[in-house]
Image (cartoon, rainbow, N blue to C red; front, side, top):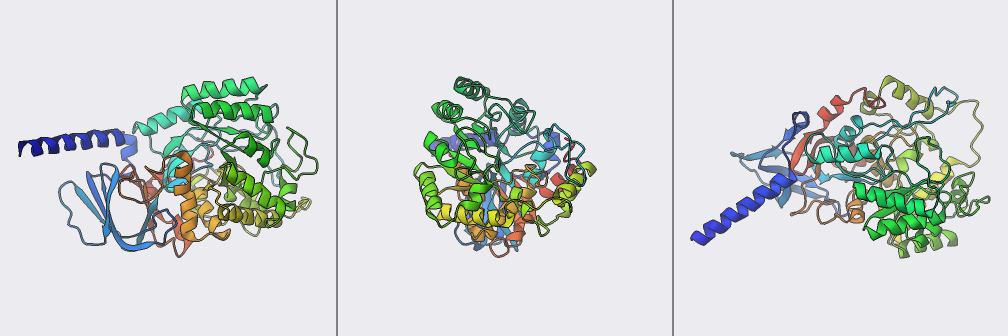
Length: 489
């Protein structure tokens, strides 16, 4: 009997230590946004979309203790008691927290942008260290990759403060500074000078604590290979928004992931030269690549055989299609500063005097959707991220939700789209044993949504509570806290 009591005390101590490590003491700032915090939380009578791609399961109870999902049971009434909070959630859906795989903590600013889409150089990327993390968490993003950092020390310090409970926001995989070649569209980019410089850059920032790297448009093959090898030696991964290097070349060099679906592959661009970005930056290739043709099949086979993931970033390209895209959301407009909102509409509207595009954007859109479907059908790992502010009209959190909706437009079922935006990201990051699906034993990183996204995918926008490590945050309070601030800080 005494040994059993001792064993129980040891187990309770271990649980206490685990809970303490999982959930540090929250600051006053963070507590303002906490809606649910208790040793035990029971979500009753919910619909579960578990993130695996399986059909939704009706009328379930989810039990959360110590930051973990400890049980998933048939729906039943549960009496609240000391230390236990019970939420009655009939009509609500619980899904995994979104794992955002192309997310940023900065805003793209075009000085003196006007109605003709003219602006003055240089294009700038001011940091949104205050507003972006809150918008991500409010939108249901519980884990994100920065996928290219401009103020990397700020991002690392932000990650530390979020993990320490000092600031609200998702768990962050901090990507190092962009691995860019000798020229760049952005004045704040560092520039590599050689393969040795690429290797040394990776080694330095890996030592500072970044956990991934992103190659950019003008990197050379030698620089990319050196960066990949240096990252892999440390167990870190490299993704790329490429142009000077084609998708096939990057796959054969050992890259782990490629950004922007198939939009920026340049292998069929007629003016493509080795290690030089082509004029159309991939549009010619996208137009020429028949999704069911031999070149597409060969490319997809190469990517799959080399275990290269693809990150779908449909929201950032949607505006090119026209026809009132993307749909306006008042909450999103409310988050922006007046200047950011004005710029949003200037970028959204095509000037009457503008010449027609050389290549029909609708064709590019249709080809990418079909290529993404074909990639998944061939066994490829498709990820999701919005690339917020890549064109100035995609915002953190809102863009992540829109990405899921657009995956459904691409032909995936709602539960498949949710898997791409949750479990697939966790698999790529090697965290699928901890996050990415609703399963007993995993971290309680969950999103509580009013409605049923498995039947109407737009319901994914109706986020009310976000559980991160078992603590429930109020989405509306987070949104209210950044109203009119995005674009400022």
